Image (cartoon, rainbow, N blue to C red; front, top):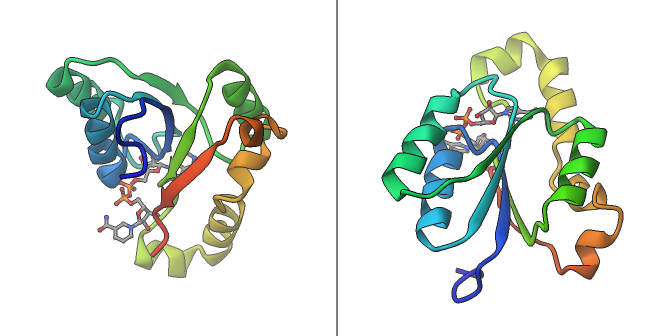
Length: 136
Ligand SMILES: NC(=O)c1ccc[n+]([C@@H]2O[C@H](COP(=O)([O-])OP(=O)(O)OC[C@H]3O[C@@H](n4cnc5c(N)ncnc54)[C@H](O)[C@@H]3O)[C@@H](O)[C@H]2O)c1
């Protein structure tokens, strides 16, 4: 993994969700600091409490939406994020057929390229890495 041998602060969007919470667990076990941004639309804060108990580590949880530019600006100002793993999004097939515009809006705005942009260049100077995102 790219982060081996070098502790980072990693931002995990959608980190309270199914894949995100397992990723957070692995990152904490590997010694990294983790900031989770999740609006809890399809997850509970409890999953992250369990991750903290299992790893005996603490993480920073921010409840909010990845489409909130002001929140992202503040997040990147307050945390020295060195890498981003991007899982926040909607994924229910049936719902996406019933609400195509909501899904379009969510997925278009969640494009991972937008995240480093919110750091206003500071992330590039700091060598921000986008390690992966949950779009299959
Ligand atoms: N689970 C799978 O088998 C699987 C397979 C293929 C692809 N994926 C993709 O991986 C990603 C994560 O999947 P998952 O199974 O962990 O889903 P999940 O629903 O469990 O996790 C997604 C998380 O993102 C959060 N979220 C959604 N919209 C948000 C927003 N606008 N701002 C902040 N947080 C938001 C939800 O609250 C949730 O915690 C998705 O993009 C999904 O399409 C998952």
